[in-house]
Image (cartoon, rainbow, N blue to C red; front, side, top):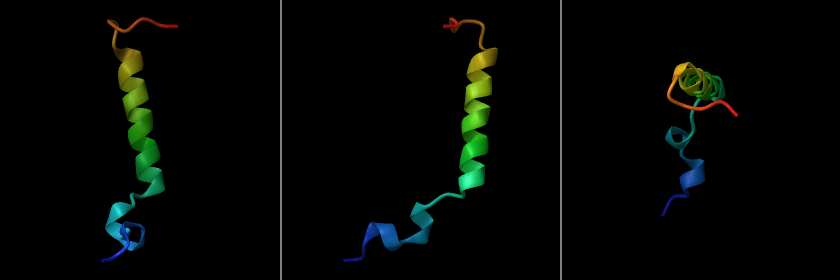
Length: 37
């Protein structure tokens, strides 16, 4: 049985992951139905 942590397909590119996170945050910031804190 192989260790799941040894399989490279289980890891994402750190920069792409960060850009996707930023996109989600900006998308929520544009949504007028979400209240600001």
